[in-house]
Image (cartoon, rainbow, N blue to C red; front, side):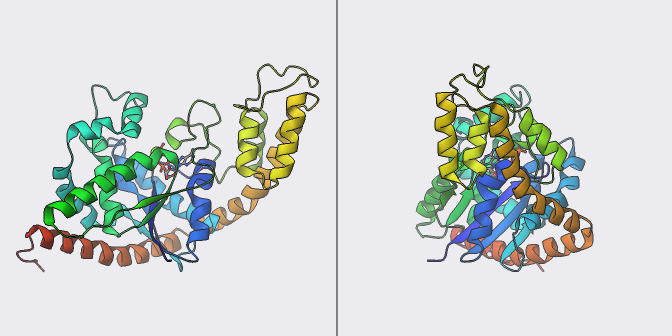
Length: 335
Ligand code: ATP
Ligand code: MG
């Protein structure tokens, strides 16, 4: 069965290993058999960067370069830009009437982000409602499946609530419910071990990181603080190096064997870090090279994004027309 897929990333910075295992890796596979659209979410990036639009505009093409570098193919996946699709903003306005402020405040991801960003007294209205704008993105493409990291599950739940409410009100199945496609690693912790790897927290290894940056990041990673001597038994749970080996080392049997050895004692931190570094260098080396090549031709990146956005515009305008018609608000269209 072919899925209709929409997914995307905020243009708040270049992409990192969390994106890779949480979503990008899946997208590269999915594009071969499904109808996939990937969106650079610049408007959503603005919701917590309202006074710093340069940060968002400067990162749009960085994100596109990351997509191409990991193997997203514009001949198979439609790559588009959120701000180029006015239907998304219009749909958001309609959907906002179907959601209460209390419901938005209860969204667990929004709730924790508000605390983390220290927005208590200065919460931008656009930030509070970003789950609604995400619902507009997903439904505008008629997405049935959304490859995301775990932090996005409450957004999909909220999207489906809007879909059901809208369809009930207009008494027709206009909008389509979606389901998440969670990867094996739904949430990669950041280098600080404090929460998920995230652009905003600066606890990342970027996809374009140099070999030296990768080396330094791995060597300074937390292991088991009580594993002082090589001969001591070590703890695997919560040990960042093993968490990353689980995510990035393709030889699962080897990782299982190393875990046993580490638990028993006799396996040093440097050894497991070297293995992790090898896995990451092998993964990132070709991505880094391709990324540099793509970044050198901004005109080509722009052409790809523009062409995909043109196609996406048709699709999203179509959904908007259906929504307006279902609401009885399709009186006339201006040229
Ligand atoms: P920001 O800090 O600006 O919010 P971010 O690093 O959280 O940036 P997003 O653009 O918000 O990245 O997320 C894009 C997609 O990548 C989402 O599907 C999200 O779930 C996924 N993702 C982001 N970080 C991780 C992570 N550490 N582990 C797994 N998936 C992730
Ligand atoms: Mg995020």
